Length: 115
Image 1 (cartoon, rainbow, N blue to C red):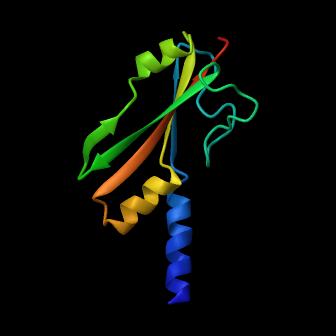
Image 2: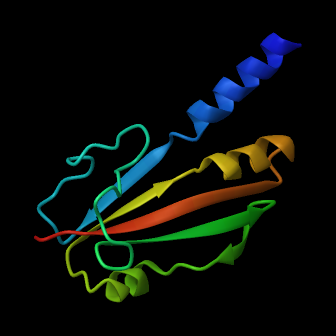
């Protein structure tokens, strides 16, 4: 039983590392600043100034809670050049696996770029 729970825990942790990045109007390519596995770090950056973050909740595949609109997130931090990062997060993955996929969550972060 311990092996099964350990295997499930490792599987859920690895699944939380799914990261997608998209560059918009910037010379910075996707994953140029690292973050291929766990996502780009926000260490040393100021929230709502250098980056902004939002989450969404899906129930049976329907987006029931989404507090982000990418264009508005970019305007909020005053970014013309930015990178969009979308990833699963640990709590969302636990919800997904313990509810059999009925509930899921994703986190979106918009990073401001100089050019």
